[in-house]
Image 1 (cartoon, rainbow, N blue to C red):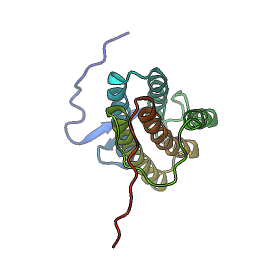
Image 2: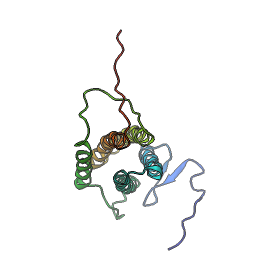
Image 3: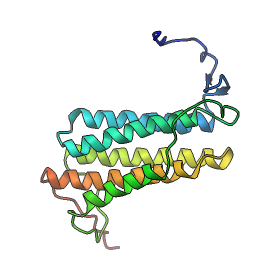
Image 4: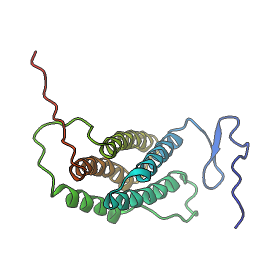
Length: 186
């Protein structure tokens, strides 16, 4: 296997290459979508670097693998159908839902909004949730402009739900109390 060159100089004028050799501006919705997914993936790697909760790390590792699949699909626009890449499907979404249900079953039911806070792990998971929501918004923008498969939209929506539950779970496991938001009286 040949070594991947880090710099190619092909993006020096504000364009980047997609699978199949198609060139697009780095500001295109497609690049914005998979760029924000890459940002989320990097944040999940940061969280794994300090998390001591094996069950959290296992879930994050699976999500990171899935995010690479999504990024590859987004880098394969119409006209590159001959490029063989794996796809996110209904089973990936169902797996996220199972993880949400497993972690949520031992948590106190929510009756009020909570601050995105707690221990370091939970706080970073809340930050990852917000980052996932931005990635989802960017994916929706691409969906509206060029179209993407519905499974990608559902998967990205479910990731943020899972990260929220993981943050709550981490606070419980690490004995941090959730801080409830109480609206101030006017």
